[in-house]
Image (cartoon, rainbow, N blue to C red; front, side, top):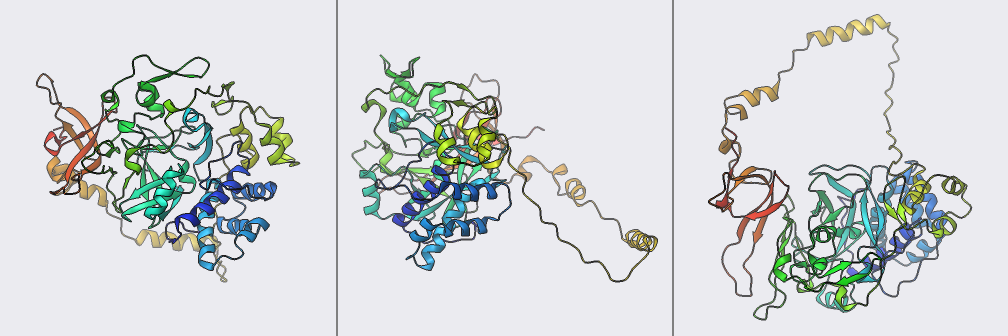
Length: 519
């Protein structure tokens, strides 16, 4: 089953129904110790056999069944078959595609899992999901198995979702030039002002992520929603970066020893949190402007698909700000897991009793040295300690033997004579590098005819007292469009630079950077 080549034509309501059912069956009823958020407020839990789902997931995790066959088994479950009974062939194909995205989470090479976080409980009133890496990623790697389907939204659907506070998965996709609903496993990737991933296209109706730096196992996979997604200048942001530097929500609040949020006596000004940290931030106008409607443009790294996403709702957050909610203590953390080093609140009985039932693997899990829900579930599904997964099976092709028997010496001599008579291969890489037009004899301006992503540069510090310019590398191309209904003129191109010394970011004009030439 190829996610890249598949094309879907689902509407937003159909995609919401499919996603609610699949997240329930393949996450909530597959050993997850908490309930994931659903798109439809009146959704009722699917009446399926949890052990049947566990069995499918376990065989996918061990590589004993192919992805397409696992999807077929899921569609044969009584509840799912009844759900699709009166669907057209096109709608059944859409469901198969979306189901494949969720089942792909359990493939041996998926590289991520769905976990729990209480970071946003002061706003949402409940624990939320997050995406955690289970293998190492390096700069530029595409996490294509963490993907999501996209469905175009009408203006009426957008207004309805804003009214119901259900627009947390609504994005603007420049490729479709419309608001879109973004659902699938990728919807659980949370925002961070210093994110480690960016959005990237996966075909014409799907989106996945690309790593912006190294990601270690156990680290949360995050992306950047926009610089004013959570209020003006993200003043209500609850991400880990804002907590670390005292910005966003943490500029006006602090968390006491018992986990209770407490308002600070001297709230910070809006300017204190206005500094950009990540180059993928959206260029936006204040949502309080009365002259023209605010336009939010998020310029992501330019690639073959030229993806640009922007948030909706004029920069207002989709949930009630924490300052408007009653004080609520965070869940107490009881310790650190001895296996995955993650903080935990103790093993939830539902993980053992309701999900596993009479499975003989349950005794192995209960008798082991596991401490947290994540490790218990991982051991139950994959049969290995976190974050290890079974290695994918490689199917080697069997070559047909010749009917003519030959002696070993004859075969060896024939092969030896053939190889000896073949001319030696030239070294094309060395020739190209040392040639007249190669990098060895070219200047920096000849190697990089123009500024582009990946070009090492020196940045003007805009300080006459500075002893040298700042070395860095271009990581993004930022395009600022004219703002306003009657705005005219060409778009302004800037460059997002990451500095070698401290890893920080800044947006620079083209005349403020020069090519880095060590000669």
